[in-house]
Amino acid sequence: MDPINESKLGKPVVYSGSYDPGLLFPISRALQREALGIGDPLPFIGVDIWNAFELSWLDARGKPRVALAEFRVPATSPNIIESKSFKLYLNSYMQTRIPDTDTLRQQLAGDLSAAAGAPVSVVLGTPTSKQSALIENLEGEVIDDLPIEISHYGPPQPDFLHANPDAVVEESLVSHLFKSNCPVTGQPDWASVQIHYTGPRLGRDGLLRYLVSYREHDDFHEHCVERIFVDVLAKCLPSRLSVYARYTRRGGLDINPFRATPGWLMPGNTRTSRQ
Image (cartoon, rainbow, N blue to C red):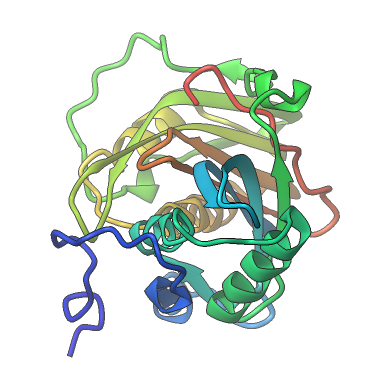
């Protein structure tokens, strides 16, 4: 039995305004990691940063409240949380009375941690906060205007990746051309990807062809980033590597996975212009 096919995911649903943590649908990371040859201990550290722009509830007097929310799911958690189920869960607060924002934050953290199988941090902000208005581009050299022919759009092709062992560099490379598809709904997932590394100089033409080869690939955001990480690490042999994807918003949520070799600091959470 496929648990996704047996769920409400990818099917018409009635949105409920009554709090229901049972709407959260966890999906194990283990199967996909096994397919990529990722064992224990993990070859990376990381976090999945979620931003919610459509969180609303009722206060103790029944007046609607709204907030922007940041959720951080550690890459060490056994489960990801399917994004539509996450949206359904957040919308279940619409007609639910919560006495104060601290109670809401604790309830969100408890439910999400239970679904992910590891502690999930929750930060609530206001739509008028200075942080909510900050926009920054991913740092690095954008490789999207390379004059190359591309004809392969899936499945992901790691053999496109190559590096020059005679030129060791530290640099960040960025592409805004990344696209994959949701494996549940088939909808497109758009992202900007930053690859920061120290090691043999990556061939830019091969890297761009490789990233574009996800264009017709069906997979979750988190799994795509982990695949990119292990492919670049195996094919190009950097001594240090981080892969960071900032996905565009869908259903009031954006997902931003980060994976890196040990020793990196976790990233901030400033939106790009596409988000």
